[in-house]
Amino acid sequence: MDSKYVVIIQCDIAHRRCSGFQCTSAFYNREEKFKDYDDVRYISFTCGGCCGKAISAKLEHFSKKLNRKCKGDIDKDKVAIHLASCMTTDNHHYDRCPHIDYIKKIILKKGYRNLIEGSYISKNSELKRQRGVYVSY
Image (cartoon, rainbow, N blue to C red; front, side, top):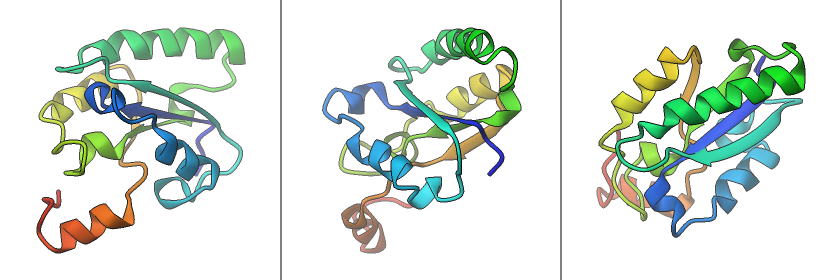
């Protein structure tokens, strides 16, 4: 993948009980949704809570810092934004985020086009989806 920066956005409510360890580990081990990344930087933050409106301010802050730190070498087209699996799937934390379409619109409005649903998927959750315990989206 041609990205130079990966942003993982995690559900604020799920983050209260989840450290994000598995998503971070999947990133560093280049597993699952992160398998095609080469030399990239990584940052993670939450949506800010329901309804996700805080994403706008957080991405604005990220953009400003990225421009200053990287001196314009990394533009928004080189940033991949992953909506963490806690937001995009039915899982042991909660069901899919009811505000996901709104959050996606904010991200696109801020000029980020490389939007990916998902991060880490546990094998146990996948088995539960196959058995119909969790909904597949």
